[in-house]
Image (cartoon, rainbow, N blue to C red; front, side, top):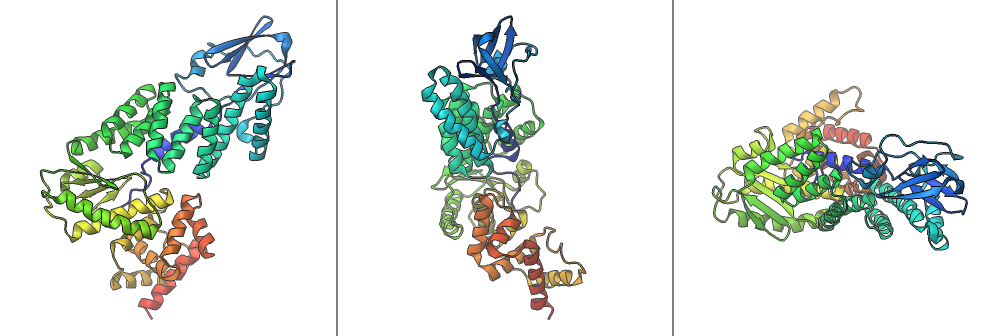
Length: 475
């Protein structure tokens, strides 16, 4: 079973991080008679002097030297950030100084941003007096390009943009956060962890960093560290979704916190060593490693981080996951399997483990965007299941009875998912399904991916599957 919406980087955390990242840094631009400009986090008029706030510092500029102030919309500063601490109490006086039309980075086209970046880079050397201000603007533009690349799942481009931004400002929070997200999405958790730990030294009061570092620790099965980071973030900014994650982790740790842990080349295994057979852990790791190599070849995908596998006694599995008693296994970014008092690996355990391992590869190849029917259909196929004749007949009768067949196959069931994947594999070949997963990982929806690779809409493929069932079982 694959629990959708629960990858290593939990969607609630990702939404929070990307929302913060996409709120591109915006600040007012003070244009001077000298031709230079100054970027202001906040400003205020004091008599004949304009006081400009930049981070923890202030600049005093005679109003007579100011040509105009280009006012741009500003996102609320992160609680505890330098901008929040340095902003003057109450609304700053806003006496007009030849205001220009607002310009918002998020509304600029990519070509406009690239031209602005080239212009700012020239100014860095030609206008030393405004170097700091131009560098700040340059970093904001690079952050926007990085965020755009990240949203488009172009992780190499995102990494390049955020690294370039940090070359101009090593403490820029958005670039640090964006770089960490790009590393995680590219499967480079070690680099993400290093980036986040450094960013927290620069911005200890930014809850978004603690949430994301907790996610990385959780994916590495460093649950004590994950819990500490999430609790820090919650203390800074209480949030219902984060509280649910904390409660879930506390529940899991109460069940498996004392389990024995073993490491292999591609897996981290945790299990109750007192209840399983003496060599059960070794047998399971040997089986998983052998199938890892096979799936690596079939999916043309190599998970760069160890896959966490947790084996539970029967009751503890349901206590930890809160699932129904008929669920035989779960992949939610980690493989979780109830094994009861198993002493040696058997065929049933092998099937469940292989099914859940397939989910790990499907999620990795598609960056966890594959729809549930494709996840479960492929996992059952990899496990070695076939559609029974009775099931095929029932599906064929269901299709034939429909007067309007446009919605056929959209409702999920395990039997229909397996049958449809069998049809697609027979018609297209398994490599095409792998290409579909790859296309989804690069930003396409399931409908777009199938259209691109088969030239047939997914709805038409479903109808063709139904017609094939009728021919096979009812004629």
